[in-house]
Length: 613
Image 1 (cartoon, rainbow, N blue to C red):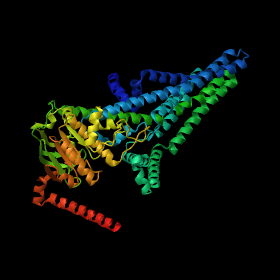
Image 2: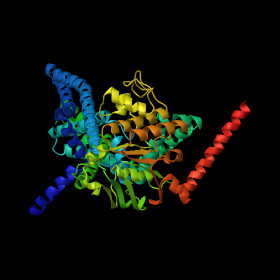
Image 3: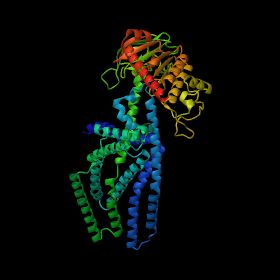
Image 4: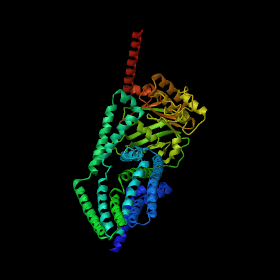
């Protein structure tokens, strides 16, 4: 029997350490030991002070009854009272500082973890999406109080637990059974309240309601959506959606945590019986003179003060804070695992000077994690080095996915991507990415100075201005202007200006030695004349580079050396503009359709101009 108990002890300790509360308190300690130790010390002192105050009041009552000196009891009461008043705001401040420190540390860890894997699959994973949202927003007050506020609520519950235990312990001076009877009754009530505060927030229904509420909230408060929301009169609709989803969350929590009638009856019965027995015994002994007035006062107040056991301990704020911290740690672990797995396949071959001959997609198949249908299906494509290739096709054909694989943000499920005959996986990732420069259709608008938007890692003003000039943004000359209206002397740019800045970022990378240029809808926000002008400049600036262009505008596409038509994840046509037009296939039909629409629009413009005259 003893051996079985000893054998089970490590498992029990391991289960205890794995509990989310233990993980939370361990995170506090690892984040800042000094503040954590002070926070716990103040919990202990604040919890003991009510018991000291009760004993001091009892001593005062006893001294009055016995006509004894009152100086010592009054001094004890004064000291306990002053400490109770002073330590509360001090503890609140310490908890707030500790919460902010832990929050900053966890966000730092999440930032490092998110940037560790070489690709982006961990940020687009369906399995991690909800967890990542919870980890990212755990301290924003979306699902519970921010951590610097939660620390005060958590501390309050723990202080009450210590106070209840201390005052129950005072009852041992009356009778050995008193703390067991009174403390046990309040602990049973605590268990009822504790069980009613549990809420599983990981169910699909809860996560869906939370996701919808967060989406409605962000649409309502984020500037990018403000124009359409007002234009289409969606403000009240968004408010209604947000309120409905938040109401769903509240109702789900209420259903999970409400106090049921039967447990309440049992709790009230236990308290009435235990309290009745204790106060009957205390009254009997007081009447017989077995206990004096001071002792009666002490034990009566202590019995009432032991009720803190019912309301103290591990409360709802700890549950929510623990969930948030656990989400950060789980996401960190998942991303660290993804980074480790990626490191296994990352090669060591330097990519300097590549490609010198060609880039080849050989029988490449790819499907995004969680999706069964492949986006690329046994794709074969050769991209000669030093030339330009345009990739066209309907939406969903796999064009942008091809670019992600080329940048090695993902790896193929099967097949290989070869650079001069070397598998892309065998090349050092950082070395290869120094050879690649790209503008994506969802390019980032950095809230940084113009200079840092063009050259995030730093550059001379001369090189930055040259890149801007080639991109057609020479009029943006103040390199220190922050590109955000939220800053003093900051400014925002039009969509076309932003696109020229993003192009300048690509051109600066070429100036720094990039040999592969990826242009994913690089001029979508420019007019036709601006597009033609900019693209001619870009082609001249990237001469000698291997350029891959994705565009729906055939006036740009036809300037490429070769054109690849994709459909359903494969290549259906490949050749020059003239060759594909002569073929009369998919490319010719798409080109003629766009050319006809352009001619029709130009005709309407001319007719309108004539009528205006």
